[in-house]
Image (cartoon, rainbow, N blue to C red; front, side, top):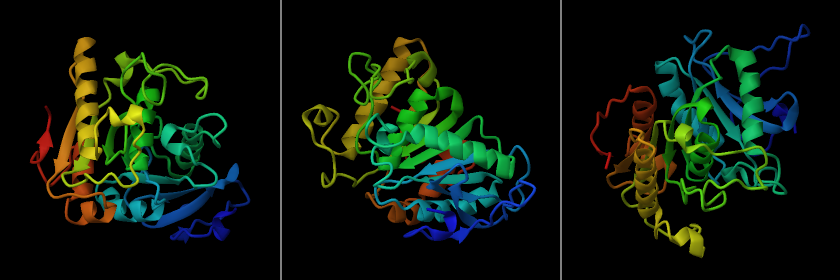
Length: 295
């Protein structure tokens, strides 16, 4: 569907291409776009008024509520303040049902490839630096974000994964998505621990995010912990242990939000999630180091 006919999404619609082939992209607005080479793939983009060519890029990935517009809107103030271009891909349930696991064969289009095409378009539209970018994901989007960072470490300057339901562990004995052993369901992707363990990643979880409702609870996943808090702690420790095994300084840390639950809105309002994310990615947080657990 075209950007002008998208259903269930909000935000201003970016204007069409000019006859000379150059795109017009207004600044200071959260815009909803359809990818020019695949109109079924939509995304939101925000270009700060003061941003120029080579501006850093922030990619935010929604959870299963598909709240891509809310995510873009809530982070747009931070992006405006710090001159960062924002992209929030929209992965639909019908079109991209396996986006959390990058889009395995037989489960719809590859979500990693879709993001790469979106970034090519955004580079053309805004002049932003898209070769390496800053990545954030919430819940299902956090699953995508940490797996993408592990699969494409050369593209990720830093990542924040908030409230992931479960994780891919740095275990070469287990096949993806449980570990990093190559999978025929994800052709062309190989995981190199000596590379992805260098990517700065902060795992964020609310202190009270302990409900098991809508949480994957298969036998293999339950071994990661009973809830999102336990699973975040287990994954962070596994990543830090793996880094030490490769004689690397651990680059993964944990930030537990006091009183935080599994609501994106609540975490943005009461848990200062926006400040925490930009602090971790860009070092420009107003919350300081309080609440960070690097153990």
